[in-house]
Structure formats: structure tokens, C-alpha cells
Length: 390
Image 1 (cartoon, one colour):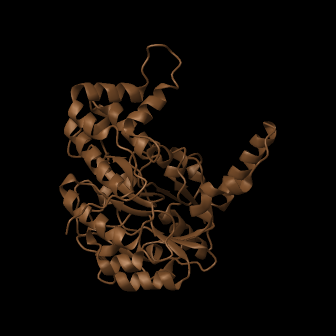
Image 2 (tube, rainbow, N blue to C red; image 1 turned 120 degrees about the vertical axis):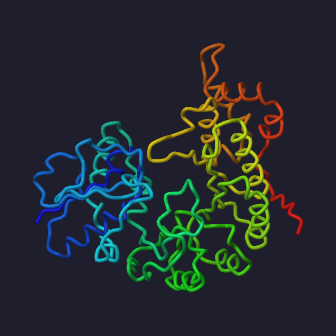
Image 3 (cartoon, rainbow, N blue to C red; image 1 turned 90 degrees about the vertical axis):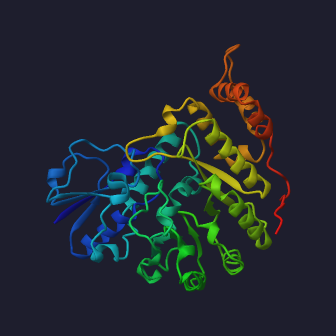
């Protein structure tokens, strides 16, 4: 039995660097049955395999037109089905992942980089190069819980209306791996959240929730446990709706009672309810609040399975510029929005030509000077500005 597994995002997205958990589980399942499993890096010669599995997470990842479900070719994942993606069979879903699935691909990437460095007369720094593969090599990955009760209309997670225990940690925890990455949708909404965190802490491994956590559910007890844990990297939350402004403000105040760390990131959804000047202003309003509490915004431009609304907006360049400013902490912490645009303009050598960033900023400021005056010159503060009044 020959089985081909295709991680479509790995093929179709140049900078994609995160393992496909479904692919790893499918691989482990078939290897246990004695099959020869191959991580295939193209779509050629599929007739040579007894079973072919193609999975993708992102809707805009390109795949060949001929791909469709057959008795031999199987497609799955949110990239194909958005919020209607079918579940894996239980015997695969609850199988220990094959954490070795990507090993040959990683080795190939290292060899190519070594050859390129040698041809250019550079020293190859393998340790630094390998950092991009850390999720493949260092982490046990899985879901402890599934589901969410929020039913946010922009979210792919529409299948369930509550949070429930999904897998015991032992189902995907590999003691040989240094860290744990959880993909849970809303772990803080689970009634057993405390036991989950206690079990994670007991492993002695640092851990993270990659999809983010619901800060609206934070309490003193949750903050105490979460911010004392051996957390890995950024604490990630979301600030999707301007309607949650006062709630988020209150929770930021609560967070800062327990930690002063700056590795606090909030996804900021834009271009969902509209793609007009109001949406731009609402984004800046949320960014400004996060700034006050020394939290980092990460702009998420909405897209669904069939459409990317912001690309058709008259403020398309503004969305691009805001995302580039926010999503690079090295710029965001040092420059106001205006300074970021001006720095981009300095790189333009052609006289009297405006760069994309400068054009977006000046055009918007000319039409909406009151918004620009309020937000374009804000700087990331050196200390937390906690102005919540209980």
C-alpha cells in the first residue's frame, strides 16, 4: 500500500511554516497499518498511489483544478470546506500524530540552503536557519478542547455551539519534544479549563495556544494561573469588534494586575463589517487602546472562502499600510503611523513620486483630518497607561 499525503499550504504558500496536524495523523494511522507513506511535494503522478490525501487550511491556497473527492483521492480541511469541513474518522482524529512526516522535507530545505550559501561564499548558519522549522521539530501539537459558543459570523469555527473536551493531552504529547502547541478554539470557555492548565503545567514544558484565547472570559483566577505558567512566546488574544471596546478595556486593566510583559498580542479584525473610513477609524481606536496597555496589535484583514472585500475597497492601500506597520513589532514599537509612512517615503529615489504608504496616509488625512489628528502621531508608550476606572 502506497499512500501520498499532500499538505497543499506547504506547496502553495511560499512562507508557510506550520505542520498540518491532519496530515500528521493520517500519516501515523497508515504507517501503523504497514503502508509506505510519502509527504508529496507536488501533484504529479498521483495514479501511482493507492490512496492520496490532500489537506489545506487556507481558502486562498491554490490547488489544481482536477482535484476532487474520489474513492482514491481524499480532500479535506477548512481551506476546501471553510466552516463545513468534515471531521476525520475517530480512529485517525484520535491517533498520535506522525511528528516525523516532515523530516525529509526539512532535510531537503537545509541542503538547498547550504548549497546556496556555499555558491555565494557565505557561511551557512544552520541553527538560525532551523528556527523557521521549530513548530515541526520542537512541539507536540493538538487540541485539548474543540468548539466555541461565540458563533462569530466571520469565524470558520461554526460547527459547534459550546466548548467541550476533545482529546486527553497524552493523545498527542511526545515527552521527547520540548514544547506544546495547542490549537483550541476557546479553551477559556471550557468548564474544565483549570484542570487543563494544571495538566499542561505538570508536564514541565512551556506551552502556547496558537489560535488565541478569549480575553472576555478572563477572571482573577484565570489570570493568576495563566500568567504564572511557563508560557511560550506571545500571549495571544483577539479584539475583533469595536462593540467590545469597554469590555476589552476592563480586561486589559485586569491583565495588567498580573503581568507587565510586552509579549501580549491581540488580533485586530478589519474589513469585515465594512471597508470604509469608519472601519479604518475603528481599527485605529482599537490599536490606540492596545497601545496604552503596551499590547501589540496584529491586523487581520478579513477574507472568506470566495471573497476578499478589502482588496476592492477605495482604502485598499490604507489597509496594506496599516497591516505592515502593526504586524512588524520592530516598526510599531518605534514609529508612529505617520513616521512609518515617512520612513517608507525616504526609500523612494524618484523625485515627486509617493510610495504606497505615503500616498495612502496623505490621501486619507486630506479627507478625514480629524481621524488623522487623533491617531496618526501616536507612539507606543514606554510605560503602561492604565486609565480604567472601576
